Image (cartoon, rainbow, N blue to C red):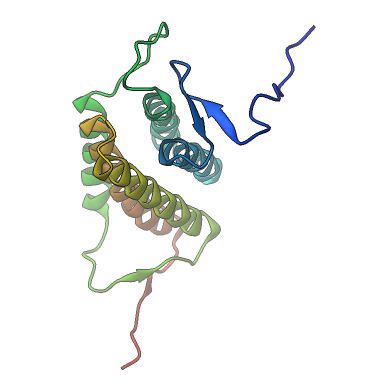
Amino acid sequence: MAFKIYTKTGDKGKTSLIGGTKVPKSDIRIDAYGTVDELNSYIGLVNDYMSDPDTKILLKEIQDRLFTIGAALACDPDKETKMKIPDLHEADILLLENSIDKMNEDLPVMKSFILPGGHVAVSTCHIARCVCRRTERLCVGMQEQEMFIEPLVLKYINRLSDYLFVLSRWVGQQLGVDEIPWQPRV
């Protein structure tokens, strides 16, 4: 018999961190790793729109790193866990930076802010970027509340939002979609 997806343990608004500590579902730590999960879902959607095989491979790797980040955020930092939690490496950030640099070689210099849009793939990259920035704000909020957060997590999330912005531009270029410059009303 397959296990049931529902446990009923959260019916009163509490959940457990890895390590067993019970916290309210409104806890900033839960919000942070829930937002990482949302981001991961959007990265999956971005990947569904991609045709470039190298980009698809990198996006799958990003999804794996986001699971790593989610697991790290779900741990009670004050308790030892029996689970082996994967970790991030500086090389994960370098991979994003190298990809950003490679895509930027093909892109024109930006002369204005760019509005999201022009193609569903471009817009989806921008949505993922916005969710990534929200993730970053939540992680910084944890840090400001003196909750432990691995410094590489913040660095990776920051770089990932940069990657998603450049990816949106690069995808648009690959699709032959003109960027939409912001023209402020003055």
